[in-house]
Image 1 (cartoon, rainbow, N blue to C red):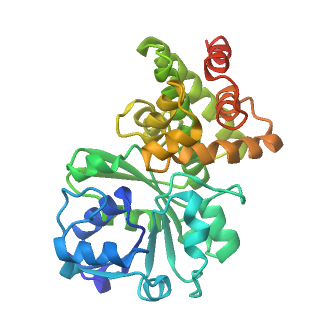
Image 2 (cartoon, helix red, strand yellow; image 1 turned 180 degrees about the vertical axis):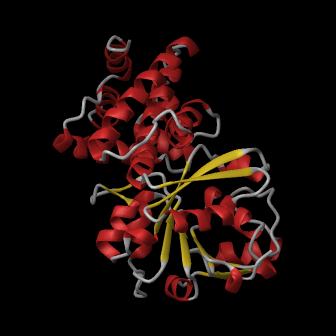
Length: 336
């Protein structure tokens, strides 16, 4: 187990308190002796210190809190960390950063956010590069099929670490890798990030079909069509050498469309069963990133003009209050 001074990634700071943030903290602490952890709520920090587990997420995981420096002061946290791992749901990222006065340009920024920044219509690495002047070779993304609940259970998980600088990607991959976390590296940062946004949208579509009682035979066809749509999108966004059947793309798509842990699938299922968007969000009490990603990607696609019938159908269902059954039936008739 390494001290921060011995690690090429330096002092690690976790930015958020949800389930995926908790799972990443678990992974890092298996390799590194200490982490910093930013949480907005002081009561959550107090409960965590008292009980030894996150009081709101993955409560079965126990932590040695003497190895964690907690703070609700974002500037103190950034000042004392070399590598910042952002796990905040994308709709709330800008709000979290409003109090930030410390510069980020000298930090290593890791995004584990599988979403897009609303209003800006940027993936997270683009946002940090443009708004906070973080160099491209210091921006890292975590991709791949990776439900936090399974990481908490030490189940085999494959992560892809993306960065323009493969040495930076490998250093962070080495920090996360262990006997149940297998890692690979990639320079396709844009493809990994936009693929993660799209797969959430396709998982909502899968959930809507599930709620409408379409069967497994049909869902397999929908996922195959979603993979083709993802390929079209990513090829327009960048000409990187990528294989969309890889785990960072299709693998993440599959687990998000099929898993019971998928918030986007659950959200879509509720829409298919007749819930309104608002009532589904209230009942879930968790963020379905794909809801926000759908609007952002629809707006982006107004410029790109990619042939994206699944995206556009989900957009109409969620944002124009059209009839889900009729819309999804029309979409189904286009599948091959």
